[in-house]
Image 1: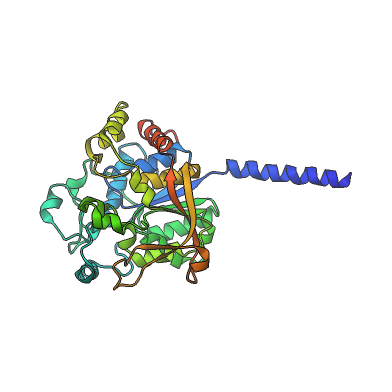
Image 2: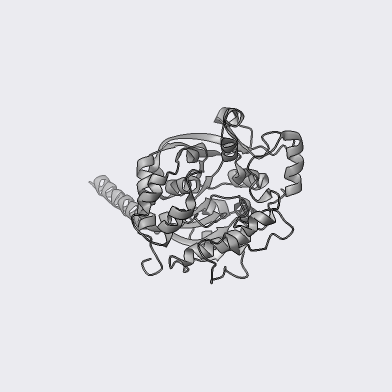
Length: 370
């Protein structure tokens, strides 16, 4: 009889823990090279009830300061300035434009170079985000089709420090989302050796695998898509992040390039008029895929994945290698030492994902509804 009572108590405790965990607030820090139309991940997180502790700017497609200003602007137009924006690291750990150009001299050109593309004053004056140049802190106002922000980023604090503080404040509850370069994440890992283990997970967009034949036989546009700039802009940071002891690492690579935009979908979004649907309809375009959005969808709801693989990953840091800065995957028995396993997403439920995006953008949360 005592055994039965003990089992009843045990299962009651187990059930209460399960309920508590399911009711626990989900937190996230979103790290990205923000642009005029890259706000969908923020809206998706809020729509799912995730409390976004802050958004961090990352140098990747442009310099981190320009990205931070874009984040401020797109939050402001939707009455979301209650979400803090924090500046990221300006430079990658090791990589520079001259270093990339030297690598290109013996490995061939990288079609999409992101922030390391040659400085083009004419393009910037016409609305392109800054690349290269002597001053990484310059702000090109012509790029702000969403409007120039009136708000400011957090002062006296940088992204890595902010990440560490928030993870320690909410241990086991904070998802780290990285859809740009991984410099900020790597710096947080090095700043606090418990940072990764105290986070809930790391979800990254990037890490293409086995795409060389597409680069060789496809168009230059396909080669640009698979340049993997999110890893290549700072390979050393990617290596640090992907070998850190996060409880879970989700890599959203090849699959993100399969979820394509279309004018039909943009028109459908615009059936509900608001500042976000208007920006997407006018400026998102149909050239690229929903890369960052796919990664956020999987953070919001991991069951979106219909096929995954558990693999061990490494980043090629051999500067003389044509795959320098790219991901390599292993099964466990063949993996070199000091690597760790990640969940590599192969396929998702596209229809459900598109529905998630649509609702988040058409009916966005704001500081009054959070």
